Image (cartoon, rainbow, N blue to C red; front, side, top):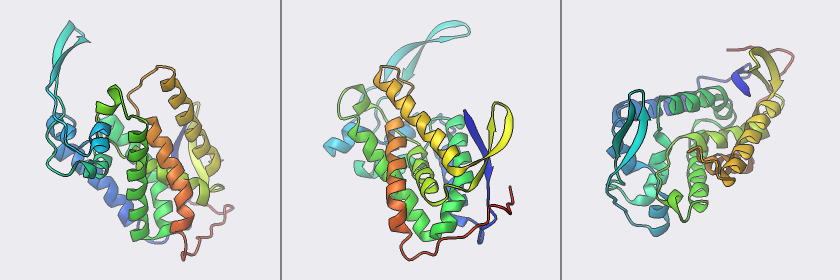
Length: 256
């Protein structure tokens, strides 16, 4: 697996305000409103549930007990049901992209946003970048809904910024295919072009989604990742209309 740890920011113009604010917003929602994932009532109420989006109505279900294995042996825990949503259910398509299922989920997403998002903000400008990010997140959520119109998936809450960040990755591939990205491969730090780093990441999403079709459920909404990526790659040129592409010399690089 190729893990990115930095990229070329030698053409950076100004501080990436929106990108930092998005990271802060995601962190605040997780730590304060979600209670580090412990406040399941809040999480279930503001997550996107495909069946609710399709029907346009709020769905409330009872909690259920399940048996899980612990160090002391099997224990029974209660999983809350779907909670009343205090906002129109369609808005959960937006609120869900600011919530996360756990600390690892949050940190992984914010790391990728930190590395790749500032370059897209630098290319688009602050307002356009914000609108682009939100639109990619919404379209990614809709892609997930479209792939889960029935069965257990239609009643499973989905959440996370992964779809929006996938849109950022798609934009990065289109705008910065040759930008140097510092990655760790097999414990070795090296540099690769953007199209290699992003391309390998996207290939992993494709392979993982095929595994889910084969019955291997990881709990990850790969359909949202792929949908967000395609949306970002497809929309970025539209958002770039009127913007002057930033120029960068790859023979002179600065790393962070």
